[in-house]
Image 1 (cartoon, rainbow, N blue to C red):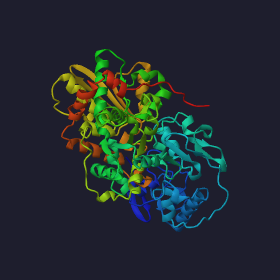
Image 2 (cartoon, rainbow, N blue to C red):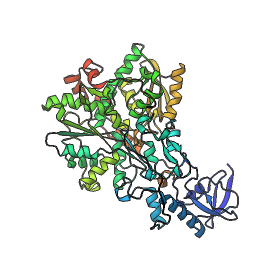
Image 3 (cartoon, one colour):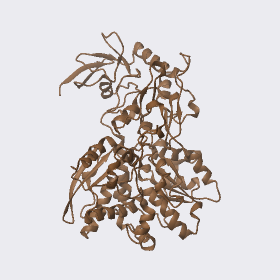
Image 4 (cartoon, one colour):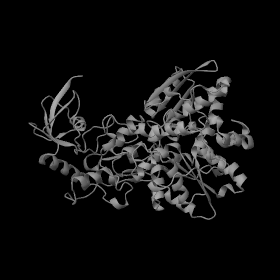
Length: 584
């Protein structure tokens, strides 16, 4: 690769040909602020915040998309560059709803941070504001265009991550907005509710629909027995909400904090993940042996379920009928647990802390009810869980590590832990399916072929003398490649894991917001740090295979009978149906 020599703030820098000024500055350790730019996703230069002065060039240059050239001299913080940058931010602020104190992104807003760094204290440009749209109709996402800065990050995320293009620019000039077609609600279009648009939004224009108040009221209702369960990926992100570095595992402190909030029981969704493997693994074995519909597709990700029901309804027969782990555990809590403890299931209130905004939609699906009882009553994202803990005045970072409640559902395997990373469901299933079918202990539990952050991973394994082809995809733009193969009848796979978010649940739409200044670091991927948290915990577990979880064995012996039994089908399995892509 040819190299280019230039100077940034009079310091010599050498970068690869084709690099931008912004990339060169990052390698030189010089910070140029951005708003619209996101590495590998969005570099339109629309916000004009990354302006720099290039010697000999008349106009200021947007460094995010301006290529370097031999001998170029760049000044990132000259008087002219700073004044242009300040003006850009002041213009953005002039049409922005500045209710910062009540905004969900207060103190975690890139525009707010930038205004502070540039010492902007006054409203230089006053005038009318664009007529806003406020949409809180959908189950998971709230859109408030009064805070939108038209950076286009959400548009790119929906297009490139999910291949949907639900969000787009509409209107012209001062009337321009970002939203679904015809300014419709998210509830009226083929939105997955994945929340990736929230994660990339630099301000508070897109946020999750909060259910903190519902949980608070349940905790203060003496007639409610309130149980909380935490998804595996939450422990890999929650610490970030309390200032801890990305990649800090906070399992013990999370349990301690939730116990101090007043929950009657604190359980781990990993138990539900182990239960899912027992059901899903058995279902896969039955499809192999009985020549059922293959490839079988996983059904753990509710955003993915919303996608296939709207975009590929002809492939619904390929889906596993298993509910997702937290729904399975919710169903068990309101049946077996309620019976053992002598509690009316209607008085049990189950709260799931999830890395996912689509889970808020999943819990109200009529297909996921047992009779008239909802498996799970409320979903809080990782961000909401942190707010709840802060509301109770708990000093999170100084808490002692505590264990999940041990009675009945306190045990979990390492296989359950890795569900939170892309490939984790597949690896957990393979550990059980291969060992059960071959009736001998596995020599190696680590199926590294399906690990990693690539969009599509695949492997071929021999299981009980049968050659099994498996694949893993995260994000719908990647999944679509595999779905088209199934549709055309050319798929070679037997089992496919699909997750709605790039990298899996560790990068779910309800996880801690990672600012652009961190996302844009060269040779850095925060998802890898979070995933490593789960793989490290897996290695530390005494039991690393779902079918060896003693409490899982007891549940089948005392209540369910066997995997995919009549009882388990009533409680732990569900159905799917074609849904309209748009509501007119």
